[in-house]
Amino acid sequence: MEHFFCKTKIISGPGSLKTLADLHIKRLLMVTDPFFLENGVANHIAHISKAEHVEVFHKVVPDPTATLAAQGTQVATTFQPDTILALGGGSAMDCAKAMAYFSGLDLQLIAVPTTSGSGSEVTDFAILTHDGVKHPLVDDRLRPDIAILDSDLLATLPQKLIADTGFDLISHALEAWVATGAGTVSNALALSALQTAFSLLPKSFAGDTSVRGAVHTAATMAGMAFSSAGLGLCHALAHTLGGEFHIPHGRLNAILLPHVVAFNADKVQSRYAALARQLGLSTGPDVMALRALKNALIRLRRELTLPEDLTQAGIDPRRVRDRMESLAKAALADPCCASNPAQPTAADIRHILQAVMGHG
Image 1 (cartoon, rainbow, N blue to C red):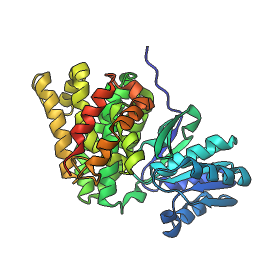
Image 2 (cartoon, rainbow, N blue to C red; image 1 turned 180 degrees about the vertical axis):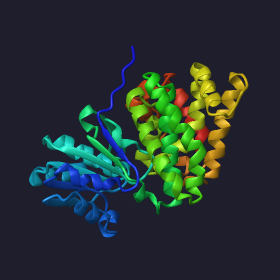
Image 3 (cartoon, rainbow, N blue to C red; image 1 turned 120 degrees about the vertical axis):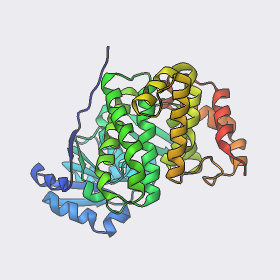
């Protein structure tokens, strides 16, 4: 028996923000970071919405903390919005989701992603950091009611952000493809997202803005896939390392993903091989197709100028070595580990960490 659910209404295309005017918003609480307040985008969206009263919570930072979410929740409780709108990347959406959830208010949650990777605009996930540990929250009430994918917001994306979020997209789709909850619908979404990412991410990275709308949609499709199917060890490790060392999430996924694929291969080699063939990476037997998939990930990582190991990402390997046991324990406890197709041991995780450590 398969289950698939996504309540989010998705509105996409250039200029799709104008649909905000049709939602009859009276009290709008916008959740964003200082950048979008200072460059006028937040005020522009507030104007488009025609809301009678607008409050902007603009304190979002990367890896939002539980304390920040609590501050935002207090703002929401005081302001009493009928709509919370998240403007930004995964951090803004995670913070807005937490605010909507913990406020307990009956409101509409709208996500306006400005990066193409997290998929948070359609998921029931949010990530908050507390005492250096990333805590995934999972509840259907965290899933936005509306996602607006306006490609006009993507014209000036920095290259590093395109690369980081692009590998987040890829890791979402690839982990969903082999996750324990994978099904026909999630597989179709994951495959389409990966086809788009492999073919168009390098063009977007090189400055071709015409492909960014398609990549944006692919990120949302990958989010729908993993929200249904689950994620895996790559994300469990990325959450753990990100909380400890504060490296961008997608960058960590780029480092970890080929090694996680290799670890999972004993269990799901045929699944990876089938994917490689459908992506046009191989026509050979399973062993060759698996190798082609791993090599394609490594090639794309290099093309997007992402680091190959933690040392290249700026982490002293001695810091990883010193924390090896606690990192392995935290990764095993991460909820994403439960849906990985092969259940790792602490020794397995230590082996992967050794492999990605690099030599400082």
